[in-house]
Amino acid sequence: MFEAAEVGHRLSKDEWDAQIPELRRKLLEAEYRLVEDPRAAVAVVVAGVDGAGKGDSINQLHAWMDTRHLRTHGLGLPTEEERRYPPMWRFWRRLPPRGQIGVFMGSWYTAPIIDRVFGRTDAAELDRQLDRIRRFERMLAHERVVLLKLWFHLSKEDQETRLKKLEGSKRTAWRVSKRDWEHFELYDTFKEVSAHALRRTSIDVAPWVIVPGAEPRYRQAMVGEALLGALERASRSPEPASAPAPIPTPSALDERTVLSALDLSQSLSKKKYARSLEELQGRLNRLTRKKRFRKKHSLVVVFEGMDASGKGGAIRRVTSALDARQYVVTPIAAPTDEEQAQPYLWRFWRMIPRHGKVAIFDRSWYGRVLVERVEGFASEAAWKRAYAEINDFEEELVEAGAVLVKLWLQIDPEEQLARFRERQAKPFKRYKITDEDWRNRDKWSAYARAASEMVERTSTEIAPWTLVPANDKRFARVAVLRAIDDALQAALE
Image (cartoon, rainbow, N blue to C red):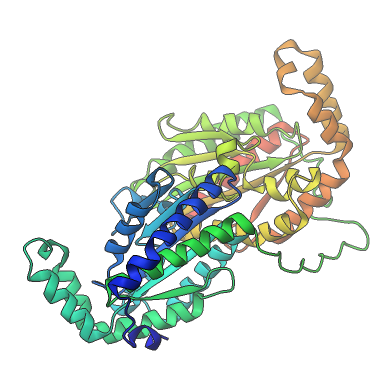
């Protein structure tokens, strides 16, 4: 895989002087086209052999281009704060918006490769991580992020020469660390693991470009040409052709679904409700104060359901049991302009809590397969892709210690109508009812079909849905608290 980068590529000074002015002009023009017509973002992944000129090449790009629209992120080992979040959190929050260029020096490839080289993971775990990366990058491509992945390569002899040269100059000695020489001693292992990683993740929408690092002029010109191609692709074709739509999930022949099968007649007396509420709120408070929760876990609670299903009342009973400094309740509405300029899941990654904290979502990332599907805000290809993208997202949360509780509150159309009329009749509840609620009610069947398919496609072994009969508010609130308590208890044990 790396042989072509070791054949001695060179660019003479005369060739450099003849080619670079035109390359710089094209780069600036392509950059401004992207800024003026922000159809896509460009994300540049910089990786490869130590001493192969990665930093020099990116510095050259900053000298050639308008740096207002080019941002470089130098990411080493995660900080103490970053370790309290899922590993991909720090990359998601740095993704460039459409119309901008983001450079990642240190990326989602660094930890999987290094962990495998040093024997902290086995081959199967590396492949699992690479498969996740491949799905992540394909998702980015569908979300209008053009990925340019640059692997800077040196032969073992060239790397040793480069490190000694840098170390021998007072001006550059600081650039060579003890870790660089440790990595050099493992050159052959790094080469083998890296070749495997590149082969597994060089896909149609995000291929690797191997950059020969031995000769500076050739290296810098090649990087400039590669970025020019990515910028032109971003302006010309921001979204790749969608994969063929998956085969639709067959509907039940008798129209019976997981939601229609719920027994909505279940109820709770006032006396039993008061006793259960006090018991379950106390249990929730104790669980979220445990040292293990503060150090190893977070709590993410997702509330979904038909309009007027009682989400707000249930959320208030949950927050009443928590320290106000510990939780954030986030109502999800239509995305802002800033959020629309990013991949769909970006805004939710920004809201993920660190260890010891609680995030409660009143509506959530499931909007793509519910309201966006029913109202036509997302293409069929986009919302069908979203099932797998959401499952991957939730798997990452759970692996990082999040206790994820997903609650669907179900009422029937008659109960919804009664609650709508009650809201209209009481002045202090009128703010809860809008024209949009009535329009959504006319689409009850479409929302019910979407919700049933959502549960079927995203109720996984690591993040199952809890379906809550909610015609009786007391019964629903107790069921919500019990589901959260039980999930927390299981995780902490």
